[in-house]
Image (cartoon, rainbow, N blue to C red; front, side, top):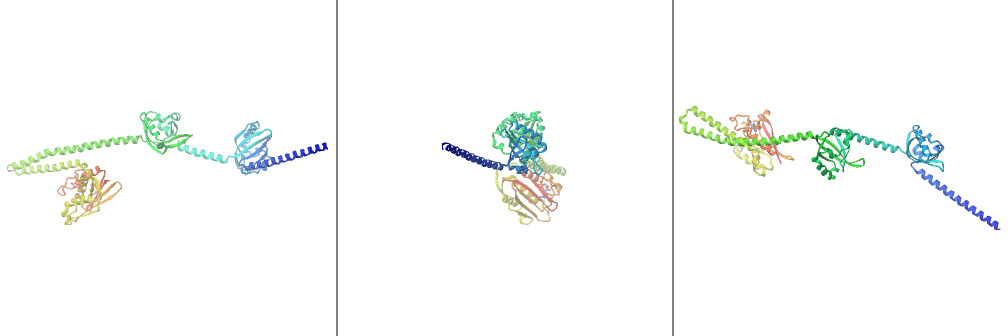
Length: 507
Ligand code: ADP
């Protein structure tokens, strides 16, 4: 019994072991099944290959990547599917793996079932206990495409930078080291590439301007935004150039940099400076001329008064002793001196025109114009002069010169009227953004085109003083006043039909 019992125990133990083993095997199987279904989920192709290079197991991804179901690959040589140009290289890599090398990122190409070439990236290792090579292959088509398009776009930008007709420099935002530049920049500064890329922006900046760099870079916000600034720079030969730099912050090779596009404005600035010098010289010489005209006309008045006075005295005291010829000579002398007096006082007035002695005040132009027309009240009442005036604005300015402008133009419109029809004078005003645009038109004798500029020159007249009185100073003075106010004057006119004088007064 004891034996039997013993055997019974043995039997029970063995069946327990078998049961346990069966359970474990089943568990392992289900684990294996779960594992292979997980592997089949992978987008990468996971496979094992034996020493001879034959596929032993392949995950489902083979279908997506190569167009072959796993069973179409299992049992066949890997090299059957490798693109012929890559077979030798791949075999060499396999040998290395068999010798224990863990391979990662090995790239080769397989041939898809449809004949297309598929780039793959492999990770692979040899498991000696199983005498199998485990491999994971990833389809690299997208990666390669992305890399290529990145390369293409990098090349495009590099080309745009390199071949840009404007000089371009990239420098480190903090250190000011020059990190890159294009061909034009090298030509502009006269350095070769190696030399230039050794430099710092400070090296091409005149000593006097170094502080400007520090001040500018301090203001990060200004630099960060697209900015434009003018700098003085030095070329390799020491010559100074003036450049407008349009720049903004970029990330370049992992550094915060400023990319700047340069515009050499040296010549423009030199030209501007010389124009400004000329302008200042003109202002000075104009002032001197005005002063000269003023002093001359002022000082000439006194001797002229003496001449007129003594000639008149001569006439008064000795007229009974003089014959008619002598008297007529004296009359000519008086007349000449008189004309000279008018000219001198006109010249004096002209030299003073535009000098704004009075205060800026609000001027109601309606009142001013009505006041001027009151001088012609008689003719207006008798319908020899007709006036049409739009409602005029109230403007801010110097009263005296503005009144002078209106007076000169209105009196001319009346003076140069046609004798056969009543004079019609129209005054209009249009408001513009920066100025008032006035026009004074008449239906008078008109001015032929060739004289439209000449009439603004001092003492230039189109008529003798017997036809129309005057000295030819009115329009010259009007022009001078308007220009000194920052305005301008021009006209349109047709002979025998009338004229319109336009002028602007800045607001
Ligand atoms: P003045 O009237 O003293 O001659 P201005 O300088 O005012 O001097 O005018 C210059 C010339 O322009 C005048 O001699 C005249 O021939 C011409 N002119 C000016 N205004 C008019 C006008 N409204 N119609 C025709 N001619 C004009």
